[in-house]
Length: 183
Image (cartoon, rainbow, N blue to C red; front, side, top):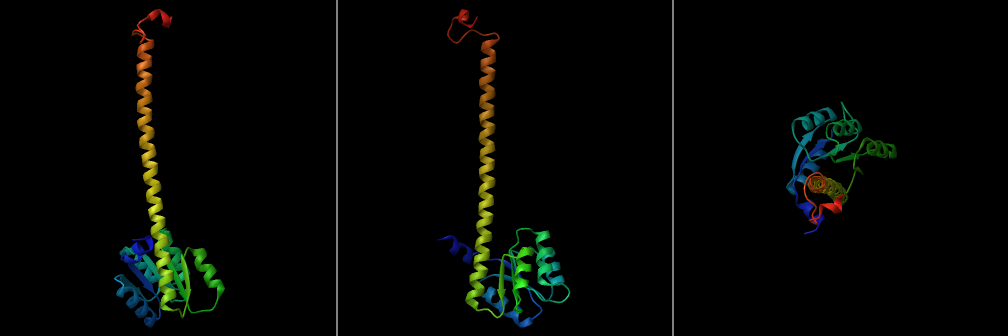
């Protein structure tokens, strides 16, 4: 099984935030059909509150929403959970929105209307990249721990060697049996 297959087989809890009920229903149905658990929010404040009380693995949010826009939501979510994958959607044909969303920390940006294929390609890419990042960090921590452990073991070995050399130098006979050679 390749990493891409692993990611698509993994089930996530996804927060979907949009003030358009039809868009929420569509995305929740699409993701739920693939086994993901979805939470719904009608605005940025509601989404932020839900993310504060429930662990989510990813967020899909609209940019233009009442009470708090998607860019501000992305920024605030990432203050709380820095590595959280966020996909931002917009129906507005404004390149500035994409730049703002990415600058705020969004991992993906998609324009509405979008095809199901495009949505899933972007969603799976975002989650795959997130999983690879987590695996890389875990491997780096493991390597650092192993390196520290090996260094500690080497230090203990050096200390034992130094103790042996000190005892030979300060009071025990030469390993060669002739103490005059040490004088």
